[in-house]
Image 1 (cartoon, one colour):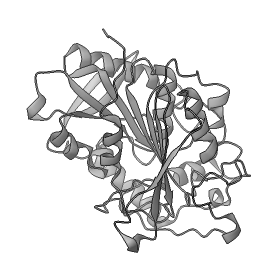
Image 2: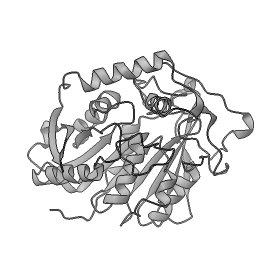
Image 3: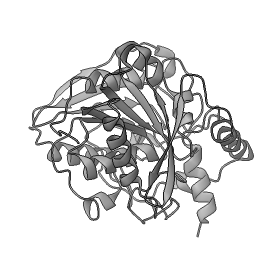
Image 4: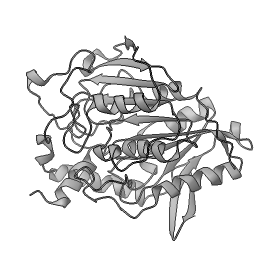
Length: 354
């Protein structure tokens, strides 16, 4: 039986910055269909989970954590502390000068399992830069050994801090920023990748009345969502981006993780989407990356937009190529922050709080 330590380390490498590229092959008979919705919905355990991290990968994780957890706070970010029960929690915030002093949209960007610091996402993606241009506040929360997704199957292996009140943490951040008139209570958004993407979906299930929209990168639902998670109390617009060659979140799913089809179907049902779908192919801006991106969109009580990233592995799609590490190829045809904000920016909740 594989050790918990090896499993934790392997999960953590999935979004580490400047990590050595690892390629994974897939039998041609298991290739995804053109639209990505005709593959087997559930398969056995992914054989890639048996792989152990290399010395170089372990060193990349160590360097990432040293850079983000022990280094200085980057310019433009303010470190904040907040009390959640008996625990002190941390988040980093950027408030553009153009919107200081008035309630504004806020995007909460969740890191994955390679770091315990929100700084990692500030360094990894361009939400801060885009926020200054578009006029929204960016918040980077810090997890406690990742995020507590509320399941204890092999998907999490109890490796996360099971007693961390992450739902309470986000509720407290929402309340604090609204009370300080930093946040518009009707325009609170959550976005995350990998373990942070799973936590994003968990937050929507728990706090749908507070969340105006969500973005999920390289993360499928755990099967625990069908049994132990609450159902969302209201429809919430959601954009999901999955790679067909993701070794960590297998397209066809496994005994602990839903497939791409099942994950999308869950949110279509939650949002009351009709069967009719609009589909289109995005521009191939970088023919050399070996990837293509196709979109499928459903309308209903709230929309579901799904990006099939053909050939993409596990990591944030970024045109600037800063996410050189991770597992598998990366599409450079899109930049996740721009795509996510373009979808979310017109979505508002109906919660009047406090």
